[in-house]
Length: 443
Ligand SMILES: Cc1ncc(COP(=O)(O)O)c(C=O)c1O
Figure (cartoon, helix red, strand yellow):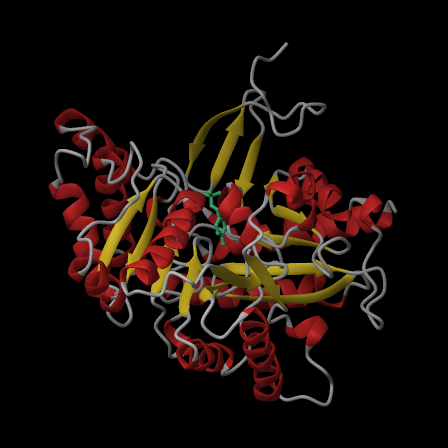
C-alpha cells in the first residue's frame, strides 16, 4: 500500500530511481528516453554536472532566508540576468515556487496595479479557451482544459472570461490569410472587452505558444501585435504566460521575441530551473513597477519560499549553462531535425492530423479522420494509449486530451532536452514512429 496521494489513485506507476542525461531509469532497471522533460521542464536533461555542483555549492553556503528580512545575492543575480535579456522594460522579477504560483502573482499584481492608479472598477480577466495557466483556483479559472476544471467549476472565479484560441489547424478558415485570422481573433477580444465593459478589464492572459492544452500551437503572423493593440486601446494589461514555452524551449530565450511585442507582465517557470529546483517567476515592466513604487510602495503578495536562494542560485546556473554552451543554437538545429523526422515518419499516418511547434517543442495531434479532422471520442483514450505504449518502448511523451474543443481530441508533446544530439533525436523519432504505428494497429 502506498501512503502517497497519487494523481491516479487506481493505477500504479513505476518508481523512478535515477536520471542521467536524456534518460530516466526506474526501479526495475528499465530506461526511458525523457523526450518531454516531464511537462517540458528538464531542459538540461538529468544530473547535469554543472547544476548538481551548483546545488551542492549553494546548500553548503545558504539554503533558505525569508524575503521578510533579507534579499540574497542569488535572487538579485538571477533577476539581473533575466532583466538584461528580457524584451521591453520587463526589468523586475518576483520569484515563486512554480508556474501556478507565478500566475497567481501576476493576477494579483495586475489587479493591484489598477487599484494603485485609481481604477478599482477593473475586476475582470480574459484568457483563451484551450489554454492552460495552472491548477490553483485563480490560474485554473483562467485555464481552458475542461476536464481539469469540471469538478471545480462552481468555485472558480466568476470574473474570468474566455475567447477563442489562436488555433489555426482547426479555426483558420480556408478563405482566410493568417493576418485575416489574427484580425478576426483580435476583433473577438475587443468585442469581449466591450461586452464586459471598456473600463472593467484588468488583463488578457495568453501563452505565446500554447503548451499542454493544445500541444505546441504557435500564434499566426501578426496575432500578438493585433492583440497588443486591442489591449492598449482599452488600457488592458497584456500578460504572457511562458511557463512552458519560455526559457529557450522554442528557440529564443523569450518565446514572444519573434512576435515583435513586449507584454506588461511575463510569467515563466519550467525551463527556468530545469527541474533542478522548483521555481517560477513573474516579470513586470516599468508601467507596473513604477505605479506600485509611486503608490503604496509594496506588492501585497508573498509566499514562504519567495526568492528561495537555493532555487534562484540553481536557476541562474541553468541559465548560464544554456547561454555559455550555446544551447539555444542546438534547440534551433535539433528542433528543425526533430520536426523533419516527425514529418518523414508519422507525418503521413492516417491518424496524425497535424504536427506543429517551434524549436524543441513539437506537438502531434491525432484524429480519427484526416480529411474531416474528426477527433477520436474521449473514451478511446488515445493520448493515454500513446503515452503508455511509448513507455513500453522506453520513451516518455507528454499526453493531453480535449485538444479539438476542450473535451474531444488528443495530442502529445515532444520536448527533449536542449542538450540532445542528432543521434538521440533520430532515436526519439524512431521510437515515436513505432509507438504510433503500434497504437493505431491495435485499435
Ligand atoms: C503555460 C503554463 N502555465 C502555467 C502552468 C502551471 O505551472 P505549475 O504546474 O508549475 O504550477 C503550466 C503547467 O503546465 C503551464 O504549462
